[in-house]
Image (cartoon, rainbow, N blue to C red; front, side, top):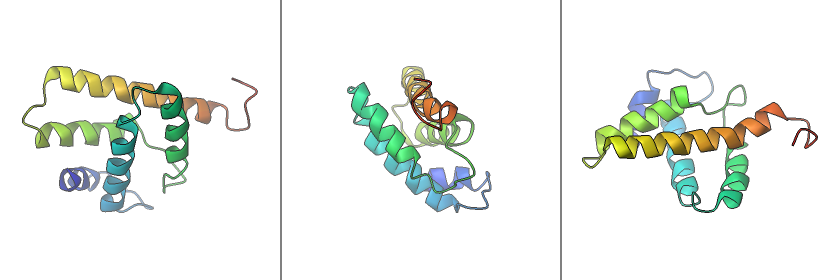
Length: 113
């Protein structure tokens, strides 16, 4: 999976992160967060903490790049990948993007929550 992610990220250049660094960060973050999907309050807090560790301070993980790389790499690496699996992962990415969007939209405090 790491090799597949690294290969995908090699096509999306970053001035800050090497493809292997980006792949390792994403793999570790997803492995941790997927375990918390059944506990939304813990998931939200941990997703924010992990989001703050994203090494490329000029950007943030997006579905267009990281999500797409994860989905494509997972499908290529898993013989059991189905349309249902794909739909479930898309839903998980939407959930996480909602959590992280709150931080993006209200970076100066909790006034907007």
